[in-house]
Image 1: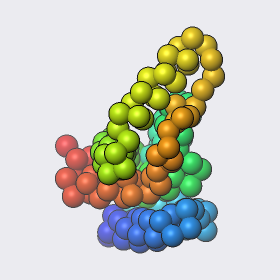
Image 2: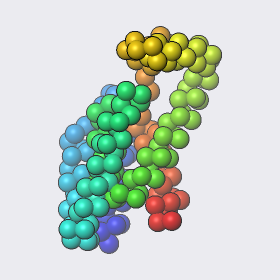
Image 3: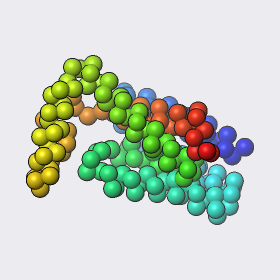
Image 4: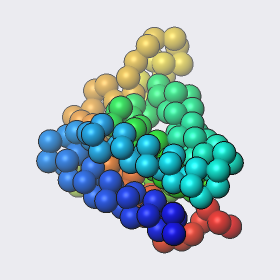
Length: 172
């Protein structure tokens, strides 16, 4: 039963966050924080300290991945907190799969956006030049020079998380 409650909370959180991110470019703490706390509480109810540990580990793996990859991926704070709340609600294994599928969804969405704006060649050229600069020790943002701008990532998080839920990949 706690799994159903956690999944229901997660789906509502994703829906609200997707709407607010699309409309005003923000994912609000007043949505993600209570959901994360609810996830931790449900973890305790379902599995005691081990359940709490699993759900805390779900949050921690997101934070660790973002900290390690932040020079490359540039996730915003709201995106990070949204994914951490998914981790708190669903636990470690689910979160690993959700992050993987979110990354795939984000890459595909970025390519679609670039193709739609006819900017694939320009962006690839800029990224290559920026990566060469970074290799030479020149600090650079990989998005520098692109006219495509930044992508709101809540859609990728939602798609990746829903794909994980539908595929049941975490239980494999």
